[in-house]
Image (cartoon, helix red, strand yellow):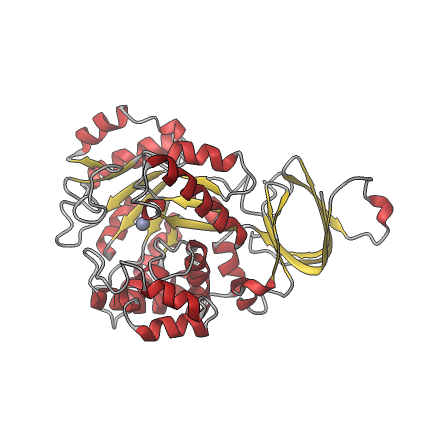
Length: 426
Ligand SMILES: [Zn+2]
């Protein structure tokens, strides 16, 4: 396939290149070259996507979500079909890759394989290697069952458990390292170190969920590759803790996936004004708002995350995002939940909107949802960018997302979605 006459935003954060043709062979980008007006350069029968001067960027990544939240009440075969529809829905909105951060081990491998074999679905990345402390987050109270996360007592226990895990077959390793009161015991730091070392030995990234600045600091010291969630601040009025954490992460090269859309939903989701705000921001339609209010979960408190605490966490995360960006920390976009969102993909788009609103430059916002997301799970060489050799996942927009990020968020600007070298939508 050839994608003609586009400005390429390649997802590496580099300068966009106008007037380009992008060639795709066997599902991968094979050439990016100045556009040729003569059609003789195109072999007969080659599919052509006429970019008409639009903007081509890598397919978006949802770098932190949980598919366990969808179709929970359905019997297994119907649930599997439903989850495939969820992945097709992501793709229709320009999200070509989805990272499930655990909690659904019974369906993950099969769904992952199905998604990778079918260009009509977003590609799924998953793990069955998820660890927490004894009775630790999220075992107690969140999902109502204990499956999907291994509870670790100490470093030796971690070593024994790791013997039963085929790390070569997972996409990454997830650790819960959460010291909030009421969340059970935190994974001991020595055990965290053992798990991260084993992940690295198997060539996998270690993604570490944290709750506080202390958790974050210890996770970075233990070798975490990416910090999941913004920390609950020691003092919401003080930026110095965030400055210190940002410096530590920049020095260690640790990525940061703050999941601000989650804190916003948990803080404000029950307020009708929040839905009005989402409508004003183009995330939601009035019909969509009615559908959300009819959901059984609407307005119900989320286990272990009181709204007032999430307000502090959200406000502080928004104030400090530019602190992390300026310090040189690589930001990654992941929304975690879509409780108050019309579709799962909209939660990711909200995350991007919030990054921009917090003051992160648009080029860094786009990189957070493309190249940096692929980097988070160790796939940067083969995915997440428009570079030769990378998997040909892309979105074509009719307006410049670098000039105004709403061109990426508002669906009316989405002209086409390319998935593994095929035009998937419209
Ligand atoms: Zn999560």
